[in-house]
Image (tube, rainbow, N blue to C red; front, side):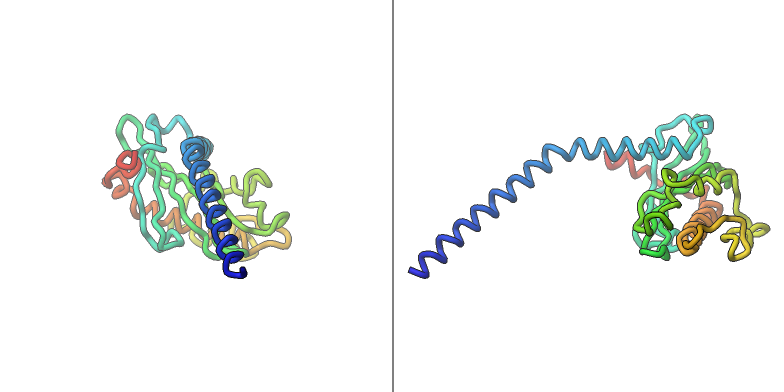
Length: 211
């Protein structure tokens, strides 16, 4: 009797698992294209907000290369979205990671013109403390715009820090670790771009290949 009850319950659980798996699979198939379009739209919106339309005439979301460099804060490959004007290099938007945020990794994208001038920075994802560290998000404060029009070189290296450390960037009241991590990550991205700008445009187009 006991054995029959166990077998019956096992069959019910197996059927339940199969049905749930099928529902998840069907839902994924029906929504994956929509999710991909939403992600692409979000990417385009971000690129447009940090790369002036006047400096390029290509679709940056379809012109990118992969980068693996510890200078960008992670061993995971990052992406450089390339801007060109009439086929000539005009700039790039590079993803990177600040690994030393208060609550872990902070994912960033920084855009540069070919002369190394920053045209915009945005925080893409983070787990910083709401009301404190999350002010690195543009929707919470305009602090991230303090990078606009800045450059990085040997002459101004000491200025690339928060004011508490003698630099030029504000920290937040009660939250210095987060802005300090973001400043450091953008500084590293600028340093990487200055050293590797030319080679980025010599690599095969990863975005086009994946289409």
